[in-house]
Image (cartoon, rainbow, N blue to C red; front, top):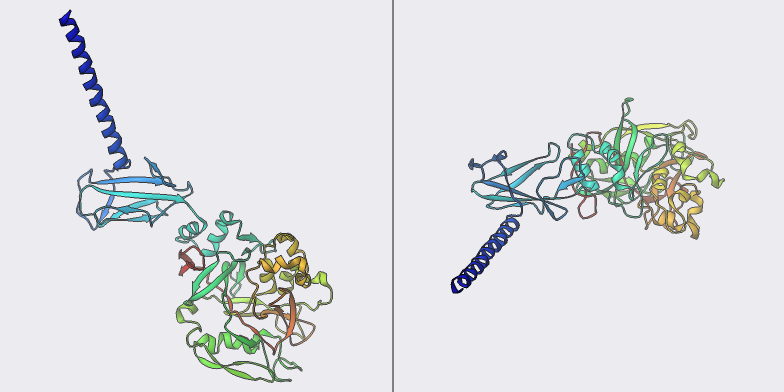
Length: 438
């Protein structure tokens, strides 16, 4: 009996020891798994600038939306590498190619190097940067537009351009060492030779000053009989932007008041740099307009795109001009709205510009990023009932009305990039604007 009892006790003790060892091994396994974070040994990997060649010297761990994964997400699954979070031990670093979807480890010189690769849901800006590596930025905007429906909308014109909309979309771009903003990706843009492409159109974020659109003395140039002229091809402002002080990044005399008056203007620090000029494409700007200013139905935004591209001009003026720097069209302003609480975008687009000044339509210009609160700004489009009228955007009530060309209003230069412009970084915010290359 004693022997039997002893054996049972011995067996019980042995069972406890066995369980304890198994438990310790289990805990150790879990610890190793978590501490190495599912690192996978890779026998085939790229090492450059390094000398480690033995298999098992490099381990990868993958995180997808902060959750650990045993596999790296595949290309096309909607993820991008978070470069800021991705790290390697022992001084090594990661180079990631989103086109080929490959990872290179740089400067790996020590065995047992571990790399944590963090993948996040691909944002619109991520998509643009990836796409722009082998495509134009303008085409990439259109290709990825469905990922940013809150800030982008097609205008449903004959050209079906893609435009930024709303009060303050993330459309900032670094250009000319300044902040500019992307109006949209414009289709069928003619470079003056008949070649048509999709190109980005931008506008300077801030005004370069208050200047006259044109202020030639009566009887001077373009057969005008009044002060100033609404013929852009030889207007004083056009010359300032494309041949004068602004274009040459220098000090000069700029149009300022009646009868050819000028004022000293200094663009030595904010005129166009040579690098900026290289990015600007020649463009066939349409110079048509309208004289139907008495009927509010003729001010409906959807009609302005056709007015601007019509052959309606005053006294046989030019209907088009090939050049680099221009101004926005009234339709650019109108199509940039996103509407608001009482008036959605569709209501704004089918409402006359004249009515935008009414209290009930305040959201039309209030949620329009091209609205410039401070002073009225010039557009490119003439009032064709006169030889000197130009449509301008009012600064306080957001409607469109014509002004005499020799008056002084805000000038915000606008232009079209060349079609080979690419976006290489940034997210379009004011603090992290898109960065460009050719």
